[in-house]
Image 1 (tube, rainbow, N blue to C red):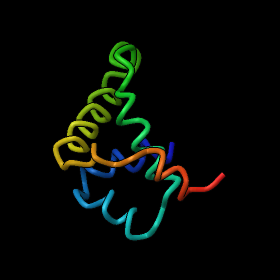
Image 2 (cartoon, rainbow, N blue to C red):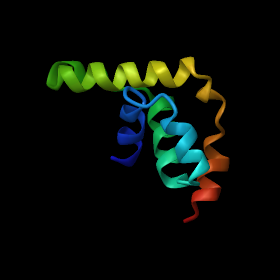
Image 3 (spheres, rainbow, N blue to C red):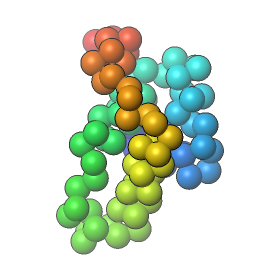
Length: 81
């Protein structure tokens, strides 16, 4: 939920991920990067179309802002066990 929440914050706050970096919220960042890399499950479009559109738009913003360059392994190491 933390990663989804962070991604969905991009709709209202384009700097949500930057703020999470500044606040060193590594767990949230790792979850968001993992979700964005895996992409949204197309079955979500059938079961919850509104959520699917929202998360799809958020992942698109994530990629457009260049956050695809994040290294998930490095962020996970910072997040700890």
